Length: 420
Image 1 (spheres, rainbow, N blue to C red):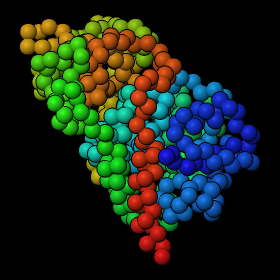
Image 2 (tube, rainbow, N blue to C red; image 1 turned 135 degrees about the horizontal axis):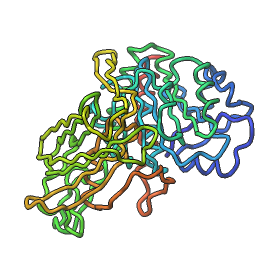
Image 3 (cartoon, rainbow, N blue to C red; image 1 turned 90 degrees about the vertical axis):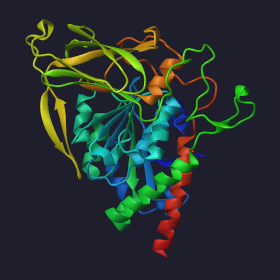
């Protein structure tokens, strides 16, 4: 079961594009005669059956296929400050999980639009299905697309600012599949109702998308939820290491004067950070290393480091969201070019190690999913160009779009009652 979507295109889709979008999980409904440049004109159409089998569905999806082969880049999800629901998070996660791509989330809504800091179970489930989820606070997400390090392969964009901005976004990214998210409840009943419906859909998704239960051989037949008590790897790399919780995170941030490291896990870690210049992301000009016990934080001054002399640091900017304010660091020439961690046991033996490449070079999160993957499969990664996405072999990815479609039916039933 997939999610129906209008395909906006003035020409017949070639077989490659059809397969690419179908692999993303969509049941495609082609609508010819619509050009990428004037795609905004279709947002006001009044025939809901074109995009959804349920005329009361709170969500409509319009897919604008790339006119050239998409690059092997990330799925970029935008959450504008003026949006009230977060359907784009689930659509972005679904397409990323199906294609093996990572997600860069440009979030303009603060914690209300976050998949990392909100604590909403459905968002945690969607995020856990993606190989990497990177959230970047941005007051104007559409403008921030120009600062994303790699050209996106897919852009997921809630339509809140009118047809002109949509047409511009589409025109500037001919090498990306653009997924437009239309909140019908917002258009029909306003923000308060749309926010309530969005919360109901997220709750229904969190119930419907729970991982399947498995029966590991060593339990003697006892059911074990795979998201709470994962089976230890066969090579016992995780033996004697503390359990990984869903809230675990390792964070590195570069400010105007310091390099900050935080270990919000139960693991003993050794962190390695390479700093360099924004215009030379593959060159390390300074190296930092620090031991991080569980719950530890470290701050190393960067102002007098010889290798960084002459490079301007990032500057502090206060971003104001609807219910909170947050200090972020932007701009400058200094960047984090690599962030590596070693997972240590009680005798300081390295059990697993990996090096990550921070996307924007200013702050980076290693999540619980990353740690689970690392301890189970300790493969060293270096700061290399974005790899071409590869579909995971074996079990198919979780059907996030199917779960979202089922959850939207809950919202549709409420809207049907309201419209009666």
